[in-house]
Image (cartoon, rainbow over all chains, first blue to last red; front, side, top):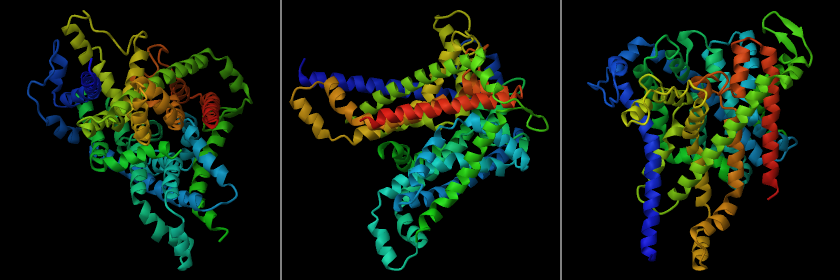
Length: 280
Length: 283
């Protein structure tokens, strides 16, 4: 076998593996999309393999808005996830900056504490959270959920921002300080603007993580008008008969924000996903 | 000026004390009581811990968690490694392939759980329909309702959902390796496998360890997918610890006992971290 033949063989192997992988990813997703276009009759009466809907229609996507309070679900998700993301990113930027610029007693402890909290199993926190939020009357509310989600995001966001701040030279800080800037002004006016890409990645990451959260919403929220979108999807399936077409339709709607974010901010997102690993 | 660093870290630290430390301490407190969290608080001391150690169901759930974590993390790493290696080669449509392979990570757990539940469904599920159509089986199989197949299906769905993150992180690591090393190696006559073994693996070790720790802890804590696909069933065929604890707390209202069980999980997760970090430090 000559070298070119061998190279061609390897290349063919590579493309085969990639195409197979993509099929494994895309076929289930395609099935979700196809199901969302079917009527319930198509689904229940089908005998054998009927891949495609008898008359594909986007009717499900229209009626689902009137059958379920989707707007209110989305509003609840945006409120609790958005609020917690903003709060977490502010705390994390300040903390990450402080950790990257100063030596102080307890710094090492704080860093490992933030890492260890990643390991606390969520199921361990859920019982105390439930009790505490009931005590302060914040269960079954977007604000309560916001508090919980913020606590998930702060440790990881701080680590990410800490990594980004470390890549920026401290000589900038010193120059600003000589020009008479206070530490806070140095942070806000000089260093923070340089970490905008990192800030974007951190924000996206926190948003996605909490947008996808299910367990805490399912325990802390009880009334229909307060449900987040992912939790609401699971309660659609709890009904006596599962309407798969509606369920898949709602699933696609719930995935749209993450997909859009990915399409538009692919570069930042991938940078963010890898920040933790490469910085080690 | 001495106080400046504390000013910066204060908001995050106070929030973490209130939202993480306090609930964890409170959770440990609850584990000493037979309680309904409202008006019944009967002190039982360490009884629940003793009970948890002897509880066959809890032991079974721990074992299931270990098996689940092993297979899922292994799957993430095998797929992540294979795809990352190929995506690092000079191939066409790289952005397209990478974009498609990331898709599973973008779906919420809830969505992935129901998608696979629907595909594997006994009535009208596409997998059964296709297998019958091709004549491989004659009657539909209840993939998630029979204990022989349920665990495998849940593992497969979890691998599908989680491999992109590992893939992207390994890819980022591979891209930091200097390509001159491969050229030099191939001039010296090293084949693909030798290059992988002697250049890629050692260079990736730090990143692999970090990703391994994070992925193991994340999979160990996995709840949503299993809860929504099988709720631990049929019987206890997919009963991992997170589901077992959730059921004890919110289906049977045994809050104290569930808290004691979760303290065990906390200790185990912490030990996983310590062991892996020691492995990392040795290099």
